[in-house]
Length: 346
Image (cartoon, rainbow, N blue to C red):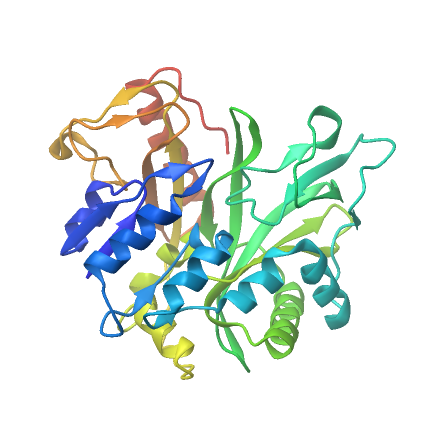
């Protein structure tokens, strides 16, 4: 397997026959560098490409990749449907799926409104309307008080299976007040709430033809109303919470579903969580042996992690959500001790 990735961390290099680091520009892959690497390392139809976060917001680059090879995942047409705010919220309306009040012109009173992007990439481009200016492609959404969750699901363009419901964690970091920082499985949702989300997912799959591993982000307001925020039409980071519970891994299930076979064998799962740590200042990576065993996605030894970039991911598992969250907090404290200016409130 060949991996094309921006960070090309030690874990990715360990599990790949070859790893190529792809430079970023303005938060996205350099198209020319990505296409050149794909051409050299995975030429032609004998090298199927599975894509994840990042490429779904670069639809022109995705189209270029699909011209010469099989791309396993949702098509550029599907990505445009879910990445364009106007088409996405129109789809939600057609399916009877509720979402927060949304508009496309700046509200006269920006208080309690957020500016969002159809390509927010983990909340990086979600800002307070009263404190920031809009960019092309942005829209405005009423800020709802409540908790944020996600549903990881597998689809074959006609039907879907929900793999798990997750609690999402965000932090305020740099210029991103709602930066995605982690998730925990076994979200505290009632059976009725789970059924409602499952019904929304079924309706969206039927209407759009979405396939493979995807995730739906939603909120439960203080008034107990379920409101959908977005659909990530590609494998999400939360697949790491369930991969060990499958017979042959979620990547294999994703490939099968994209090719039209919806098959998923799941065992009873432990509670799992992960939390991303971002470098507060420039950090020089330690040797691999010096990282705790519960750290993943660690940079290669001697590399430089710039301020605001992911430093590592903390993982934990157990039988009780409260115990797992407590373990995550303890491990965050340990990282904060190593890099004293780093704080990550859950």
